[in-house]
Every structure is written in structure tokens, then in C-alpha cells.
Length: 193
Image (cartoon, rainbow, N blue to C red; front, side, top):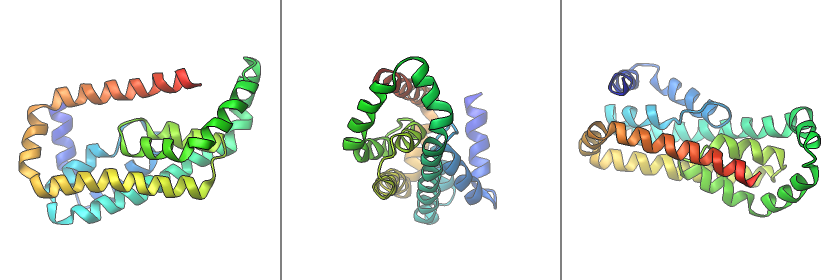
């Protein structure tokens, strides 16, 4: 099944609307969607290595813009949804303490989540909830997402077929590592909150 999904993404990567699909996936992944844009970014660059930098740029821009949308979800919907839940469980004071601590280190959290497989959407929404300084959030997002996607682009541009062979040989293992990192990220957030 994984091989079929991988083949499907390779075919999608060469479609004439692939860049739009990548931008859409990168945007929604930064706020609500659980699957990272790498699943389409990698095959797109492998299919058109000469466009690696444009593809990475579109992915970076769309991801950062989606991060602002995720920030908005946290900022505008916390009072209606999050605050009543915290109050119900008598965690309002703990949240106030967490908010202060998070805002002291928030730019690093955004940067870390932006370059690692950690669920970035969790950090974008959390940054809105805690009202992290928006320009700091945007700068950290663009920097982190740019580093992540441009490093991927550079590696694929330079080592294209060799990396593709590695991915294809180790697809199951790479998928399991991704799932473990994703679940670990959610557990870490649960522990922190």
C-alpha cells in the first residue's frame, strides 16, 4: 500500500497543477492537516530537479502563510473553546504560567518545530493561543521552514537518483519513523500542557 501511495505522489508531482497542490498541502499542514508537505515536495523535486529552488520557495511561502492561519485559529478561537475547557479543569492558572514561559522561548519553539518533523500545526496554534509576538512568529516560521525545505531541495538537487533509491528501498522504515515522531510530538505537547 505504501508503494502505491508513493507511486501516486510521484505521478502527482509531474502533474501541471502540482505546484498549486504543494502550496495547498503546505498551507493546510501548518494549521490543521496531519501530513507534512514533504510527501509531495520530495517527488516534485525528484521529477524536476532544475526547479528545486522554486518548488522549495513555494513550499516555504505557503507553509509560513498557513502558519499564520494556524496562529489565527489559536488567537481567535481560544476564548470560545480553549478557555472554558481550562476553566472546567481548573487549569487557568497553570495556563497563565505556561503562557508566560512559552512567550519567553516561543521563537525557539517555532523555529524547532519548523525545521523538524515535530507537528508544526501544534506550535502555530499554540503560538496564537499564547499571543506570541506575531512578527517574531512570522520571522521564525519563514526562517525555519525555509531552512527545512531548502535543505531538502539542495540534497535532492545534488543527489537526486541516489536519494530516491534510498527512499524507495527504505520506504516502510521511513514511514514508521515519521509516525513515531508525529505521535511523540503529540505526547510531548500533552506532557507540557
